[in-house]
Image (cartoon, rainbow, N blue to C red; front, side):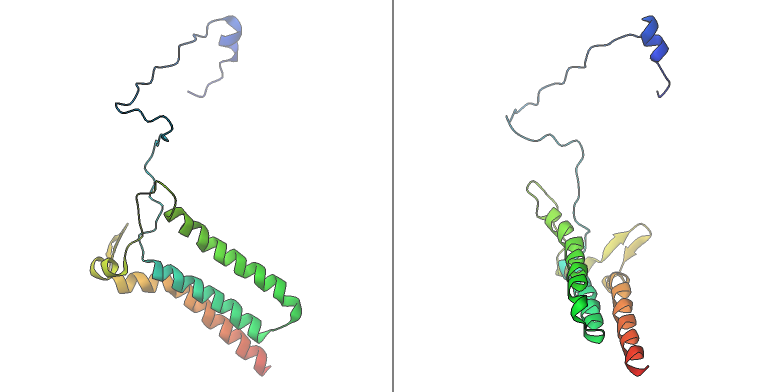
Length: 152
């Protein structure tokens, strides 16, 4: 499939075939988009968990700014906050795109069913712990750094 065919084209041995005909849909809509692949744009977790993650990351920035408050840090902290909001805001916008049939899992359904991962079903508590452990550790690390800096 990926072999060089320059010599066949140059000698005239290459065969040109016509474009295959595409059958028209049964109900033709003039400007309807044609989707090749169905895309699921949500992460099958409740919105509250994503909000808690954003809050923890922004909380880390607040701890750092409170501990090392300096007028020169206002712009970098604002840029970091913008990146955090954009990093979680763009996927939030994906779920709300027009023609998106998928929706985030509700908190009630999450509590009742949990989620299914590659290794099997995961209880809601375990899923929440796995999702929030890193942001929680980062906030704890930030608090530790600020305490050490205050004592030294």
